[in-house]
Length: 353
Image (cartoon, rainbow, N blue to C red; front, side):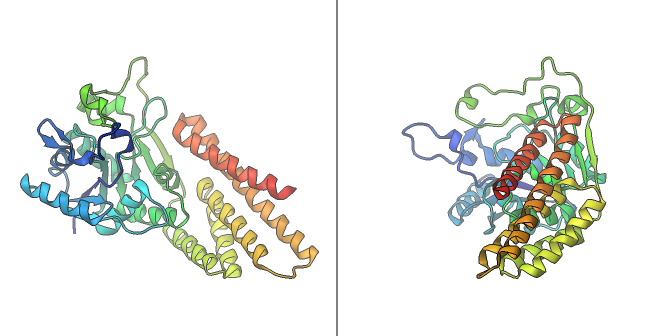
């Protein structure tokens, strides 16, 4: 079994890369320094991993990439994204994790042509005691598509997030038990002084003038760690069973399972997963009420009260999560948790009327 794998995400539409009246251009195949971006990506990682998996969105792309890699004498497993409840990078990550059994997975986009081998090695080495390693800049922004995942935990998390229709990749560090957010301007800068590893090509203008990250006036920031309740796997599996029960309109069992998950996550002060189970519990109760016919007023009011409580509990837990990110300067995660809090508070207010 492979110990390390690289998942190269190459199935996007590259909307920002397109120009005016030109036909659609596949960014992964754009030549840069005489090689396609996809070739740069694979050559940069192949010396540090046991297998390379390229995730694409359709069979035509898969065949096209296969021929390109053959012309450069490169080998990689090319897989078409699985059908999931979400799209985008989260779907590609789901597909890559399902494809490999490697202990740790490096996830990168195809448009970062300067990733250095010693930076990859550093991230793998720091991942030994963590489930997620994702660089974070001193301004609190994350490199969401340049990370290391411990496969066993990552697979459980990504499966569950997809089933819950949560498509934002930065939910992954929110969901994991052991998270390291290393600062690029600390140890990594010693390995890559110009931090060229983090240059990505978003639009065609980036090809004309490569834009390294602006690190002026930023103090050297220590790495950030989050260590949460660690025994996630059994409860995440129970969450997925509850979702399935709800989708099959088996509301009583779904409610029982969600209540059990909520209790477990509360015991571990895991605000993110507690909030999610509360939110989904509210949705389950609401659907149950909407499908019931001839419900008397007292029963209807009782269900409405439970719905309100569930959404308020969700909002409060997202708020507790946001306070942690505010204290540690994780602006990106703070924004996400605050958005979730606002949504649940809005639902609570809606059913207060």
